Length: 438
Image 1 (cartoon, rainbow, N blue to C red):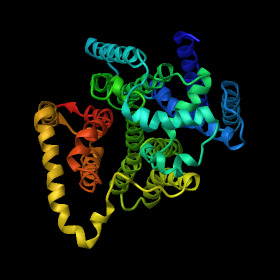
Image 2 (image 1 turned 90 degrees about the vertical axis):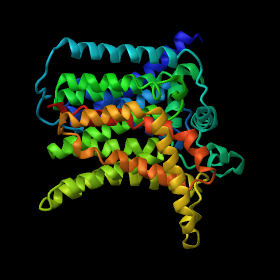
Image 3 (image 1 turned 30 degrees about the vertical axis):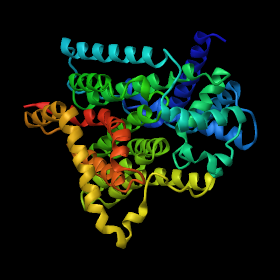
Image 4 (image 1 turned 120 degrees about the vertical axis):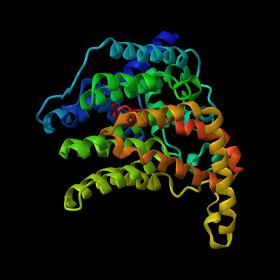
């Protein structure tokens, strides 16, 4: 099989998942822009494809493209028969066709094409892909099962048995369409997620703010070279960035208008975030707290529905994982530091972590940080301001996690901090670009 054929089959698998995801999510995304619909359809489709894969593995049937397509077609058919789309049409306030907007969209497109070429130019080689994301996906694909030893064998402790499984299972499902485990063809999933992220950003802000705001956010996100680079192909960072954008946009829609479709999107975003990375559950919990606090005290039903739509799917996911793989110890963290007899060690460790954060910000991100501060000062409040506290809160929890690292905190920061914070950047651009020049 040539690379061109493998890439075509991978594209076919991604397109099939997106089409099925659109059919299933159609009732809740009808009023969104087409670009947003594409992003939500991909997220729903990846979840649906993994559910189909797990169903086949459960009944001990070897997954294949035909079987997965049949499952997706059945799910889409059921959705078309029983799910009624919500009324209404997409809203496009203050849409402009200025050359600046088109230039920014073109810049975002060019940056995405560059990432597409880089991502599929070679096999995925990131250490995280080889050690756990791709390792687990390859085992599932080659054995046609989710072996218990993957979570119980002490020799496989290096594979981070506690991590969520959406990424490795998505890669295994996509490999079923390709017909073999082809690292180079499977990398197509990452440009697809990057494109969906740009579509979600530009579509949401065009609908809620203006086309220029959407184009600016898409261009800023696409030019984030620390996120969209070949080293992140095969990991969870790029799909996670998409999940954070979807979660943020659905939270802002909920604050503006409460209906069944926005609650459904909150729930889908919660499940998508939690299924990708452990900190996804933290992010949706922080969003739930924001929605709770921003909702009037006399709107109790609205408070509970918004919080439940965010918290329950992520919690259900972790309960399912517990029954699937049992209790898993976290090798990265030394929770004995929270014991009273060790509290005295925490301030010095936390100060060490904060000092390294500050040093990284001063030497590597000073100009962007200053640019963000200036932009906030010269712009009016926007619809996304309610979510501003979520991002420093997420980083604060990262600092706490590094503080109780089982290894040297500085080693953990140098190995992971830049990568995990870059996943927040596209969602932060959504919040930032919702503001307008005074």
